[in-house]
Length: 131
Image 1 (tube, rainbow, N blue to C red):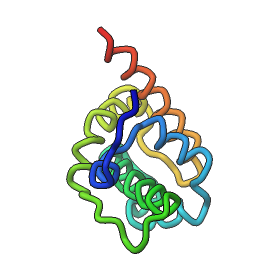
Image 2: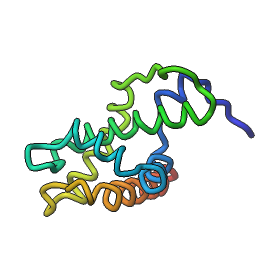
Image 3: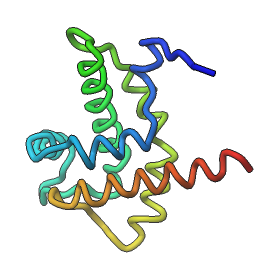
């Protein structure tokens, strides 16, 4: 069975395993600098209060990247509110499970934390989807 996702859905939905792969394989220092400029505090760190915004911003970058690599032209019309809503559960999980003792994430820790955390959560989520 093949499922067709129309362009509109594709611009407003992210599989966390795909987002994890994007962070681990495609995000470079220039992208992280861009993220940090928008999201970090005065100490150049992302705190637990910034997790949802960080996930939303990263997901928007990923959707734009995916849009262009699939031949899209111009700026994709991404509904950032829908993306944010989609990231709420994983953001709460990160805050409660991964940042209980870790107060913030430094720029050089972004790939090695967010990539694996999203992968782990996506695998947990799949396990519970069949309960």
